[in-house]
Image (cartoon, rainbow, N blue to C red; front, top):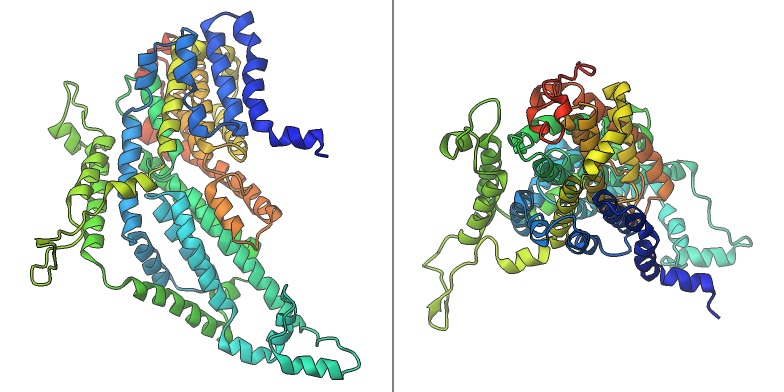
Length: 591
């Protein structure tokens, strides 16, 4: 007989999808104002996102239903929010990322860097972190982790087992085989010896061997964690590296339409890239201390047998690189387009000098009318036009009397298969929520309630909010976290005459600090699925790393971010919704 609790648990998602709207219904009924109705929609979506009762993208469509029916926004206005310039930038950036993955260019880059850095324990961890972080700046964190983890385990296998070690350990491998789960004895002669002995106990494993096994396990754990952590850290460096960064850009443009493209690829990179470098190095030091110990001499230079193991691991990387063969025309073309895309992004409207967008495609105010999304789609469309190989008429094979042309660098079947369309809709739902909060007056109401925070020093506000977001994102999607928090943070900043970017930038970055739990982010889940790690191991390493991350981000927002975003003053573009700060300068947090 199935227990009632088991039945309820099995049907929990169906029950929650009905209970949440019903339980929250008194709010818009008892307080029949637009603010309360919008709050009902936001709280309902927050609950559905946090519990994942419905798929995240499905929940994101609720504003299409709730806002028109509650009189908050017209349906046409809500629909416009679902495909803004930020969504275009996201899709265009992913077109390039998919092309890089499709032609294995990311693997060639990874193996090349690893061969350059070497395979000594500490440097190996650093090498994997650098490669993973760099790739995560441009392609999906999940795809990067899925590619790097098998390479890491192959290298670890060679570092652990080598002919020299087998000869040194003698017949230890036999006793190790006896501990296999299937209890199968592969070497029959030792088995006969045990039958003749009066005491059929296998010889004890030497303490030195046990110590090496423990060290290898810790090294394996450190290597696994370094990959997933570097994937999350690397994504914060570029605007397209991870979705919360794009949520921030979209929210800024939606909430403050008069802003002069203050968050673009170049400005974000100037702020986030140094932060990423510092956090990556600190993470490397922390993982090295936690899993390799304080013996730096051993970590950077080992004994003779270890050198043989390193050579074997080095050969594994070399063999993987040889399998890729020489660089093809397709890889060269994708590399050229990738570099061209990055250069165009950086030079479009850098801010500290006139970009090509200001000079060639400017509006009456001298601002570029070409966006980062325009550039991304220009390069993305070229991927569908340029062939993947040069025509070779001498070796061209005829097919049914016709010459067969080479395929393009990218085709729609590949894009349709690899494009995360759910994130596009999730972004749109977040922009619709932000616009609904503004139109209903909920943002202004929240801002008025948060005015007492003006007495708290601004750095303390930023630090506390970063901790809150970093904690919240451990058990909720980072996209949902930023979508829910950013409109509230912008209202709070306006209410206390604080530059909205001062709290929105660090909190967006903190949403990527999901280091403690396997379910916090897909890279963590991929690494955890390979075994060797327990939840406690990830939580122990990730807890301090979260603190380190928040401190690093707080340092960044209070130092070099000032000159990039002019955080020492309340911007004029933020005065449209709150005129009480007109002409005021916030000097309470000047460096």
